[in-house]
Length: 199
Image 1 (cartoon, rainbow, N blue to C red):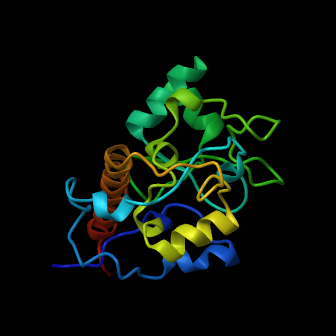
Image 2: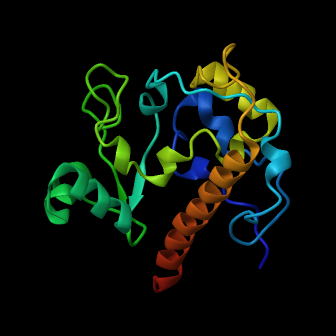
Image 3: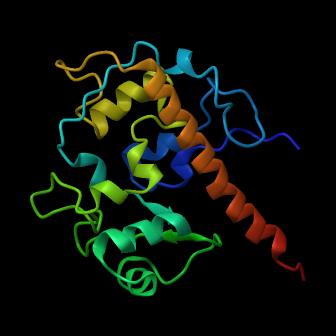
């Protein structure tokens, strides 16, 4: 069965009204089963400009951050905690996707639980989930209009005046990782759905 390419927007930043457009299909992607191919992505990232300014805006506001089991183990180790303690303290108590955990957000602000109080540093930088490490090279942002909109709404490093064109090989690799990660996330949800008994 052929489906429309899943978007990482299904993982994060989908509830904020300004960012609802992330749910809309982007015509740059052809219908595919699973992730984008790991090769041939260079044309999608060529000419894009990005330089992280460490502003922390990608870690604030509306959105969700998910981590798979391998990532929660790495996060727990990074913090010197047992995996069970980490899951209890830093993830939501539910998940509709086996093997995936929704990270908690700070009460009141909705910021990532691991964003330092100065709002510019990640407290688990070396163990961040793939969702974080691949940003802004997410499939739904490769459309030029969405790339510019992301710069306007969230990330000042996109098209920043001091930014140079991205390293095409690196950016394409990040895009492939992001795409595969999203497909894995979506497959976990589909597996749970297909496992339910119908009345």
